[in-house]
Image 1 (cartoon, rainbow, N blue to C red):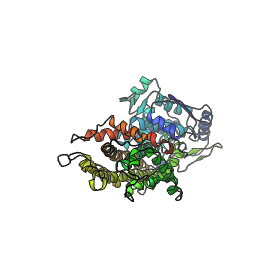
Image 2 (cartoon, helix red, strand yellow):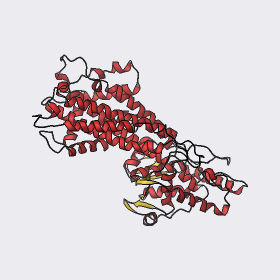
Image 3 (cartoon, rainbow, N blue to C red):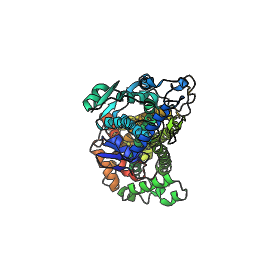
Length: 516
């Protein structure tokens, strides 16, 4: 099994968990492999040497690449072939991916190569581990991959640092890769047969980006459950729609799980108890249908997490080397599963923000809320949350465009040899922008709902929501009269992005305890 401590992870390739991958993304823990993994790596590398000793051409080992696969390369040029591959494929563009994303990408490459089907020597994996542990992080441009034939450009930039070319960060400082390796005491790699291709082939960039998108979606989801429950109290809504019997007769698992959390979040609220006998029959959908909407989002998150976890533990380069010496050219580098999983996460992110914005609209409308107009005293003299709701609407609408599925697009590459591609890297990368947008919406709802609860004092909300409300109030004071509002929204959105409310729904989230 894979073991974990607060400072070190020992990974068993094929058995890595979402929680461990999240820990790698969020921290700088050092990494090692279980001892039993190395035998398979060495056996696979030995198979490559046996293949070289045979007569004939084997793709990726002693041939060119892509459309040039028919070109046989002499044995004395194999090292140059691999080096040239890395240099020529380092053709990315755009700003660099964050160090945390690249670190996760490198870890995923370690896991994939360590499955023992890639034909690389142990020294290649050791070099990757040393870079991770010494905080040598390659500069990897975010654009340039179509998510098929592997994430070639991003992974080439990663491999570039291993051979001492290009640029990298060493403990947060940007410098040449040669300097970074030297300061860390790591010898540059001289690539052997197939090793450049094994590093470049695979889905580790798109998978890392999609995993980060999943973790950001989890933070959004948990915060939106808190803000949604706070809105129910601020609007004196009913807890009846969260009754377990309602959800059990439908049987949707995400809906059942989220309803349980809503009941817990609202349990013990004095505000709820204060209007037991009111004449209101039903709340708007954005309040009473929260388990149905958020439950559907949770189902998508869990489904995507299963695909991403399988991919994180997979051997995805080409060709794959098997025990009998077969080097089989296949298509495990095609990232269609990641593209579709990312598209489903995009839909969830958009919907989480969209329903949150609808609750904000109710909170600022005195006819529907029963609260002061735009949640501020002396409205008219003060505009209060008027434009904060407009900002939320802008962000929610922007995400509708972002949510268009990337996986339905394809553009042939490599002289039509690679004639169908997944666009998984963009599908996953755009999740970060979408999460930022929905995080802004939820930040506004947290502010608005907290403001509404403040107006209902001295009645208290539930213990758990008081805790969430108090955390917000540590960063943003009650809105007494008009003031510079952008810093308030930034602070609230920052809490969402940082996962400050993650614990409130942790038990139902894929990386927090839910059995995926």
